[in-house]
Length: 223
Image 1: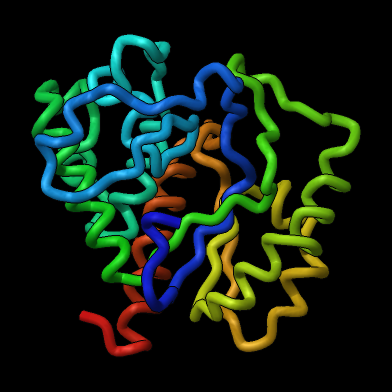
Image 2 (image 1 turned 60 degrees about the vertical axis):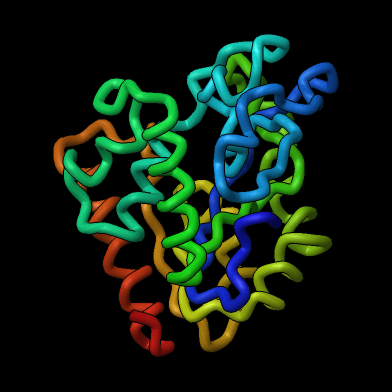
């Protein structure tokens, strides 16, 4: 909940975080004290955890991970006009400086919070292993519906966003009826970034996120 906006304008409803093994649930040993904001120091394989994909931040006792650079591009698209230049500060390939990269990520997270953008997982439990395999394959729909009915749906209704962007067609199909019952909220759906293999698909995802997040914030008087 560290990055939940005080007032939520757009919910990004993703599928699930990656499973974090119990032995990885430990305090990160990176140079947190060098950054101006008090940060959650427990490691988790979740995009809001700055140690996920940043081994220098996580510390040597935790495994090096790729993280989710595709979600940093999604985040950047919400706040800025999507382009390689807009994505560059958050990616190791274009910004090799660890400190500059973390500073850029922190600034982006603050901007998203000011825009009222909040990432929420539809599943309260991890649906993917550290190796990328889907967990609970046969019970996928049941897990999503159970989590929505007992946890996630309450979070979203309580947040009362202007708009929801569902990231993933599978999530949208599974929760179609539940989402349709959220009166007064504008609904949008985009492909998961890793599923965008046809030309122009990922650019459409970025453009939709930018338009929805900007419009929702402006509709509620945020500049």
